[in-house]
Length: 190
Length: 190
DNA sequence: CTCCAATTCCTAGCGCTGCTAGATGTGAGA
DNA sequence: TCTCACATCTAGCAGCGCTAGGAATTGGAG
Image 1: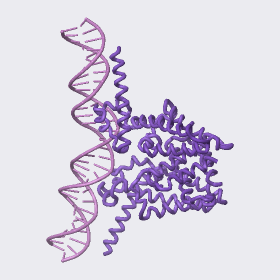
Image 2 (image 1 turned 120 degrees about the vertical axis):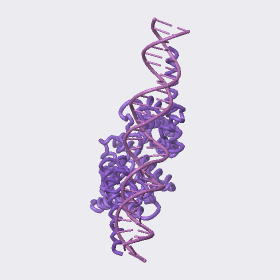
Image 3 (image 1 turned 45 degrees about the vertical axis):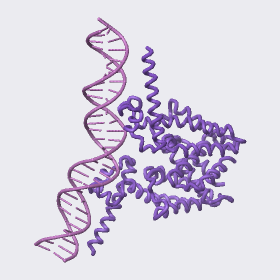
Image 4 (image 1 turned 135 degrees about the vertical axis):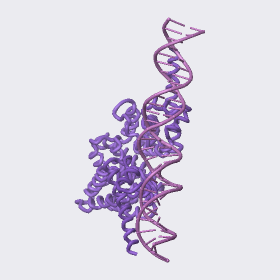
């Protein structure tokens, strides 16, 4: 029976190796460079092995995205925890969110732009995603007024997401980024 | 010499046919369905003909995007022109922007998500794109206060873009869309 | 009218992609 | 030790964007 346990453990390790390889390759060279052949070479197995772990390339990207949700939630939580006062918390959280997206653009894309077939309504994805969202909610809660907190949070989040994506795709010039972020923060913290 | 004129005219017509075919196919089935082979079949020429008009598939998508910029600028201008009062203008313009993105998702993607190699700093792209941006600017101008108009406009635009993209990718649920849009408008029109 | 040159267009194919069927080898249980 | 089941690999499919080289058509000169 212990051999079976060892096999399952090795299998789990290999699955993690696939996710890590995909993540590293995407960060270094972008998702276009992440091909099933390169991934297979990276983990030193043949191509079909990937398909015994994941349904397809999209599923691998989804797994990378899931790890990203946890990271982002942690980053936002840390920013909120160390902020001096509620208004500063909004600014710090916004800065942390944008920094995450800019430092890990490929992962951010997997989380919010690509990989549509994520199980958004089930399982463990909402766990970390909802955790990040809850951190955002608590951050802006003091400034909601008499409106709906969830709606307010979603709108603030959309502002951050729009800033990030428009700048990364070249539609907004890099200079001025801090000022735009300041405007957004100011609009949602008073 | 008139034969040459006829040839140039026919060539221009064929180029427009390519753009229109790409646009229609993308709207109907998404950009993944727009392959050079299907486009060639649509215009009833062989594949290489496409490359005598455009550098590659990306350039065709860029051409579709350029047409989209004009459409979007017109939609925004119309909304602003018919609005009753400056505060209502912000709401109407925002609604028109979002409606455009939702009714022509593939074109919106070509404009703002894909097709990175657009000549953003030259030629006629900025013409219509800048026209749309200028309409946005004029709409929010009464509410800038003592800040920078361009920065303010860009931030408002980012909010709209974020709402559109997050909802289209399933990260925001469709119900609540109107309320989120209302929150954004309220934050940028007071 | 004929011939040549230039242009236009197509056939065929390259290297790549995600993905899979069928063969091959390996290891556990009788 | 033998057998069977499972894990893994080799080889290949259909499709992608893109291009080289040849065929056909066209326009102008003699």
